[in-house]
Each structure stands twice: as structure tokens, then as C-alpha cells.
Image (cartoon, rainbow, N blue to C red; front, side):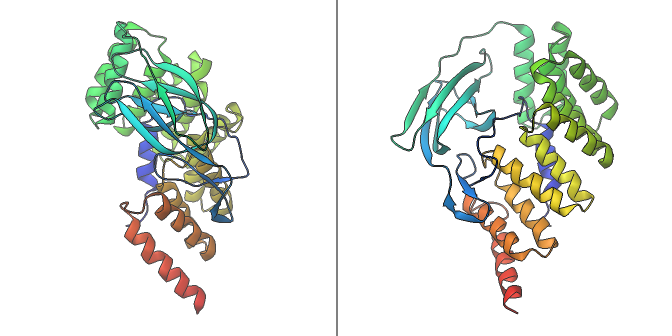
Length: 320
């Protein structure tokens, strides 16, 4: 079975920071490997629009999660280092999350060459609510959702206005199909507003889709995008998945393309899903390009052999 829509949707439920990101070139389509990033025009995956550079992030701690432009790019190794050989050039905000430490926020300028180095120093935190929240994130990343819920509840008990923890528990509860409690938590997060409002609104849309309320989910995704001024790859991709379920192909393709740009190509599977939609719509040329982009980003991925076979079949169909 080639479809990965539900798998991607489940990943959305597990994201832990606001996903609104600055879209620097809405006309361009990205091009890169699964963790680093490159951009290319929609019409040609081989002609990069934005140059790329290399970045090495050093935190001194294993398991630090690095976000560039609010997009998760990877996790530091046992030496506390993360090498990113292909990152879009430009000036971007950077944040680093390490359990037991206060989040680090800064910026980096990536240039085509030479490789840039970013050394991050984080301060230990003793805030119990933050520590419970961080432990919950770690457990959720490991798939231990019930244990994560317990940690988030402790975080919220210590700080009731902890919007991030309420959003995280709502995501986790949706994964566990505890829709009623997820609704309670996400509504509380929405009332808190502030900088987490877009993410909370998007998680509400995710919840509606998980409940099978596709029409309502589309309304909520569109509301999230209005709040984000169009800059939320999670909302764009969630909307694309919902539109595809309604067989609104052209709209779904448009949302996928925007979402891929904003995601800085950190999720190769998005191209595979886009290829599936285009293939079904008999847009074989576009489908081949999408599958090739998947292979470019993840040549040894789970669906690489399937993508290669599909490309060959579509090429044969075009020759007939």
C-alpha cells in the first residue's frame, strides 16, 4: 500500500513547537535531502532557485532538537553535534530544545560557502512545569504516549496557563483517540491565545479531521492559515490532505506545493504523496517529477523502490 496520508497526519499530531514559518519565496518549490534543504522551481527539480550552504550546530548535549525557521531539521548526536550539509542560504531564526535546559533562541546566516558553525550554550532549568513538559515531549517522541500524557498533566497542574503543554497533550490525546479530553485541552489553549494561537488552531483542525469531520477540518485549517497570514506548513499540508479526501485535486496540489516550500523539504514523503495525487489525476508528467523529487531527497527511503517502479510505468504509459 503506497499511501502515507494517515502516517503524515499522525506525525502532525506529534509536533511540539509552533509551526508557522517565514515563507521567503512562495513562487519557488524546494529541493533538498530529508534533513537539509534546497529549492527548485515547480517546473524543474534540477534547476535550483536558492543556493544552499552547510551548517554545523554544536550544543554539547546529545538529543538537542534543532529548529531553523521553526522547521525541525534534526537532533544532535552523542557528541552534541548536528551536521546539516544542505541548508537554504539566508538569515533565519534558530531555536534549540534540550531536556533539562531552557530553550535557546537565536539566529544564523547561512552562506553558500564556507560551512558555518553555530555553537549554542543553554542554561539549566529548575522550573518543574517546564521539566515535566520536556519529559512529555521526549516520551512522545519515543511513542510512549500514555506516559507523555501523565507528564503533560503534571506540567499543567503546576502552570495552568501553559499553552504549549496543553497543545502537546491535545496532540497526544488525539493520537490516542481520546477526542473529548483533547477538545478540552485545545479549547483551553485557544483561550490563552498569544504566540501559540496558530498552532492551537491547527491542532483543532487536526482533531476535527481525526474525528472524521473533514468539512469542519477544512474550515479550521483555513482559519489557522488566516491567523498565520499563510505561513504554516502544518496547516497547508493538513488542508491538502483534507481537500484530497474530498477529491478536490487542484486545490490539494496547490496546498501541497506551498507546504513543501514552507517545510524546507525536511519531509520527503510529501513529494511521494503529491505524486500519488497527480498520478490519480492522470497528470503523469507532474507525477513523475514529484516521485523523482522524493527519490532525490530520500533515495534509499521506505518507498524508493515503489517510486522507481511507478516512474517507469508512467513513462511507459506516456509512450503508448
